[in-house]
Image (cartoon, rainbow, N blue to C red):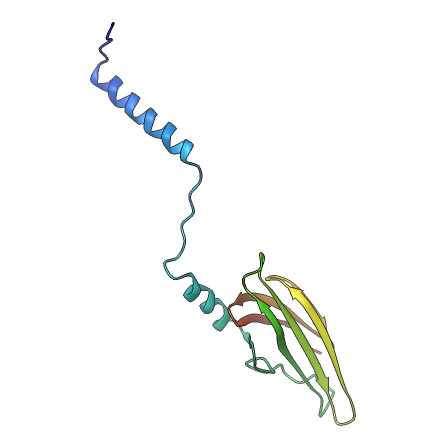
Length: 140
């Protein structure tokens, strides 16, 4: 058996190279928040508008359409699937005045999607367990 003696710097270089190779074989790593639900819920509660499962309107409510006295428009979640990949929210938008009412069903919206109804545009900003957040893009 033949042994080759390497200088100390060669040993150190070999050790570093071996460590790098082993780290590369381990593959990518993912770090997550210690409390991911708290981070997610903060994204929903910090949104300009929040939809909560079981409540028939957003918090705060949408502003009334300009020039349409007596008309109210509201949005409510019909379903929130935060377990889907990607998470989705379905929304029912309702418009009501003294003589009529109308509704629009907006299904499977994802974060970043823009929904248009009754002259309003909203953008979904967060989807959490039992809640979704959105911002008002335009109002009539």
